[in-house]
Image (spheres, rainbow, N blue to C red):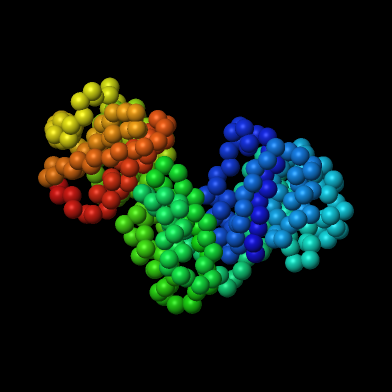
Amino acid sequence: MKFNVLILSNKVLTGQQAIKMPELLSCFYKTGNEVLTIRCEKFSKEICKQEIEKMTESLIVLADNQILDDVIVDNIQLLGNDKQMVDDLAVIFNKQDKKIVFLPVDLDFQPLLNKIMESFKDNDLKYCKFHLFGKHPSQVEEGLKDLGLQDLTYSVLGENLLSDIYASYKGANNLIDDQQVKIAGCFRDNIYSENDLDLSQIVYELLRLKNLRIAIKEDVTGGKILARLCEENNGFNSVLSAGQVVKEETQLQPENIYHDAYTYLKDTVADVVLVVRGKFSEKGLNCLIALGDKNSIHVYNNKFNADRKDCLEMATNCALFHLVKKLRQNDFAF
């Protein structure tokens, strides 16, 4: 079933309340449903009315709980009487072969939406998701189109060098899923996860399972890498040998960061070392990432062209992605 999503909330529009788009899209595609559009508007009776009048596909309306009843009452003539309640919070109207679902956006709607989408599940469809690094969403969509897979519906989200694919498709019930294999093959160098674990969680799990301790030093990122690893993993201190945030270097040379990483690894008696240095210019951020163990240290040179905030997010994501790839190689010697 195909859906358009209309969000009527001043809080969401102004950033006072956040909607987790990956979770929102995931609940559609894992049940074989598809999202065509997502719109966020300031509350207006007229906007909702126009959306219902012109609807060609099913519709999800997310509105603040205090105005939800008014939205429904104002459009009751368009909605009809064929309705059902879900957990006393959501209302579903059936209009011919279309569904119109009203949900309170400010009352933890996600579990309720998951339940509703599950009731619309198409058992003939399969679902997959991939999390990628280093591909712009437009490049991901182009790659998916070039695969020429039949009955494939998908949505791609992305920012700051990370992209997420949410896809559903019809596939044979066999051990090897050709559709999923082809998608994975297309982006094999960029995929870092096929589940709900993000980069920082994968880093922690790999360090924990391999019984390794890491030393991290960062300057331009100002502690963002350490903060993400610690905040998203309760036990990260058990694998952290040392963490340090230093002032930004005026000289940005590969040999300097290589020597710094080697010395820091030795001084902290860690198994793995990660050192990040960078310098802003008019075009963006020049960033060096040193990563390795006692046998070898590699220096990666990166340039990010964006505003300051996005550059720092890109540098953080880039460092974590290189760390994930290194930890998965199983070529550390201890």
